[in-house]
Length: 392
Ligand code: FEO
Image (tube, rainbow, N blue to C red; front, side):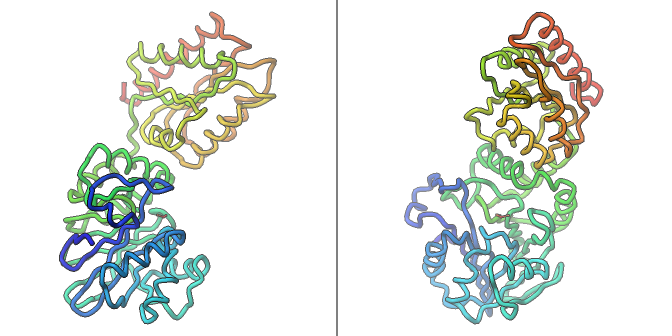
């Protein structure tokens, strides 16, 4: 068992013995679920549980902490990766009460099948005494569902933030100690889970910034000893600022679209614009999401398949539309056999983006001089747009 602070234990669902080796331990889904046991002088609380698929491992880890009684099970979030073992925990500690907000209570009844009687409802900023320790509940809606909340351990200045500030990093290390790795995995987590809720997250960052913080302990990934590290990163990601960067997700069937992509990449680099060409075929969609966080411009590149876009490009358009990045400009390039409505269809799939569309470039078969000239013009236009918003 790893002591984090006096009377606070972390119950990570990772292989217990291998924790000694301080090495990365990937889980099947590449993440980890943390819950925390807090022992006050009078009462003991456990904050969040774990995914139902890990229930026996989770219960085993709780028992290994040696804790004799749990009085409160705090549910910050209904999603089952945190609530999925509450039922089994209640079998072990039948007198425990599930402490949560009214919205989460209602969802837990629906999703986890808990009885109405097992709950204690708490208001925003309400406190719960454990004796010499006090938990304050801070509502933080939309990080990641509408009912999400955090707990603040008043005496130790620790924010238990559940999904908020989490990282897709399954590691035996209790504390974050590799800033670059932590940054990238937290950014990926933000991109995949939080990005659609930027306005709500902004408000929640300001709300938790009013607290004096020594540690931020999320329920995914390691604990932050330097809370400003992750808070500042979040401030940047949720801001409206974009970088002088063009993301080009592409698929090519017979190399014509790839030739167009290569040409545009070179043209943009010559103009001092950074570019990330992303081959969707075999690519990691999570890495694509990370690039969507900052890119000022997205250019989708697809061959026409039958009469529309390649299905994999359609998938990327659907995902980008769902993630609602702060992309300012967008365009489409690609090669067709005889015709179709690829451009119209892709634009129709990106209705959530507040991006200004720049004239697409399409050509029949392999790109010729006329197509390359149009790609030069597209690169000029992208540079001009980036200059207009002061990033180039
Ligand atoms: Fe980690 Fe939204 O669950």
